[in-house]
Image 1 (tube, rainbow, N blue to C red):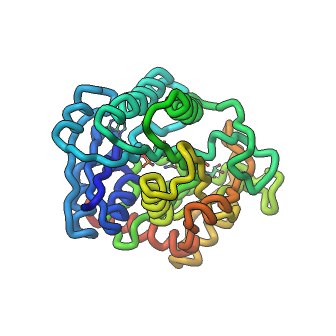
Image 2 (image 1 turned 90 degrees about the vertical axis):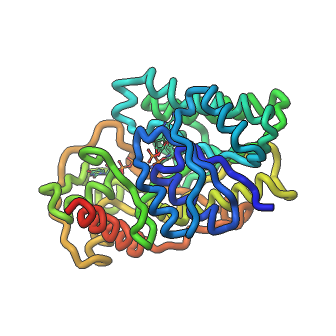
Length: 343
Ligand code: NAD
Ligand code: UDP
């Protein structure tokens, strides 16, 4: 019988791509999302790609009553992937309580209900932000956790601690914590992708909107860092590769060969790419020029960080496969599709 997975935040950016991969791998999926940062039309995209529509519950995970009803009405959920969270770093500085409430209550409600409904494990979306500015690159999972520089980052650190404390208390659940590097791109079908609201803060949506003429120019935040071309370095991971890692994590967590009650994996390509290199990759892949200028450094930016994904490679059996040019082509195709839909 197909295993049933609850995907919180499943109409969001990473969640929707993961639901596609789960369904294609034979899992049944149930999504809960309050649509605070996504829209219901995403379900059409998932259905068009996979041929089946996930069960969808519109609801808020901070409300334990809503979650309890979901578990009552959808018996036999084997695992959870918890994407539901608020994720804008700048907004978290302005509205810290909203971030702590949303991100932490969501997680605690899920954990509390798992033993009651026999849910075996939870995959949690963490971030490389927990490492702060690394002392060495590439960075592996044993690197120290640095003091968080934003309430958002702190919710990820605290969430990791909550999961650990809960499992160490003897709770009958397992967890895999995935620390993502920089997820970018869109599904190659262009049927789902990232839907930033308002002016994007992140590099790739800003870049594609600039290439499309929606923004006048892209500002490169600093070219005087201690990097080969002076711009910051990140590890950009294709969102479909990232989604596939969740399927492998779920298989491991629910399978016979689970590697223990709590495991942590970095999810990145292992390759650092600078802002200027990413712009060039986009231009090369699409043939479209990106007007840009060099601006001031952005406060709080990390100079350089990229993953050592060896543990995920060897233990999960997962490896990032999509090349950055292909990711840029998919990001651009998605941007074009979004504009066509607005016409
Ligand atoms: P997203 O905003 O696109 O998706 C999150 C979804 O959760 C949205 O659809 C939103 O409506 C929903 N949601 C938020 N709070 C909810 C609640 N209380 N109840 C029900 N639904 C709720 O974000 P994403 O980029 O897909 O990120 C998914 C997860 O991955 C988040 O936990 C995020 O912190 C983490 N993450 C993202 C990145 C990134 O760069 N995108 C990097 C590292 C970690
Ligand atoms: N960046 C940039 N211009 C922008 C947005 C981002 O130069 O308009 C840079 C930013 O300084 C960082 C990189 O792009 O070095 C990735 O930024 P993003 O906000 O996408 O991710 P994060 O800072 O979380 O790694």
